[in-house]
Amino acid sequence: MLEIRIKMIIEQLECKKQKCFTYKQYRNLMQQLVADHSSTGKEISEDFVNFTKLNDMRMKRLEKTIKVPEDLKSRISQFEGQVTWLVIVESWCADGAQVLPVIHKMAELNDGIRLRVVLRDDNDALMDQFLTNGARAIPKLIMIDNFKDEVLGTFGPRPSAVTKIVEEYKHIHGKVTPEFKEELQRWYNNDRGLTIMEDLLALLKC
Image (cartoon, rainbow, N blue to C red; front, side):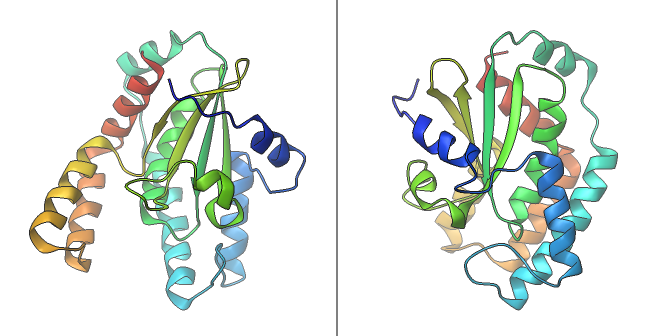
């Protein structure tokens, strides 16, 4: 269990000092950004605008095609806690577009899981508590016990299997290339969200 107390940050979000979205509200935001030829983030570039448009299309497809196997549905239904899954993301984040629809599908299966979404660049203090190897890597899911005000664990920025693949590739090539990003896209397509589901169940200890 992480000994990080973030009650003040959550209260600030809920008091609308910063924007905190339901999944539906976040999707509405993305669709509005596409219509406005824009993106989230402190710096809006043409690349970020194009990535936002592509991610919206990917999320629409995943929302229609993601299927949670019956055995995984049974496992998540056994979770008896009351938690918030707080996801830090941005509209242009490719991994976010792959991961967030799966998180949403899983959260819908248990009333004890409340999903909320916040933007990284609007929440520096929050993001800096959950760095990955010193970087503000997203998406990042923070699981919070709603009664004890404790962080129970985190997930992200990528599924466990992809994290290993990326680390090995960087070790050999030094950086992630456009060609490798296409390979990652194929991995996500073939996996169909199953690794993300298993990672989330491990987080819940189900």
